[in-house]
Amino acid sequence: MSARRRTLPGYKACRQCKLVVPEDAKQCPNCGSEEFVGRWRGMIAVIEPAKSCIAKRLGIEKPGIYALELVEE
Ligand SMILES: [Zn+2]
Image (cartoon, rainbow, N blue to C red):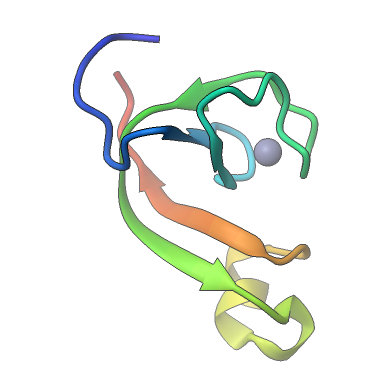
């Protein structure tokens, strides 16, 4: 991962499911992916995915903080 400025210092987003996780996470706890990006545009906090039409539209099934649009480095 590049040393460029991150969207949220100390955090990164899963490339596959866009879950925002701490920088030291080796694997995404949501989908198991090991690829992350350090920059993204927009975030969404999902608390009750089953009750959120936005979460459904984004295909989010687990609570968490998600990036909306990843910025490829
Ligand atoms: Zn993931």
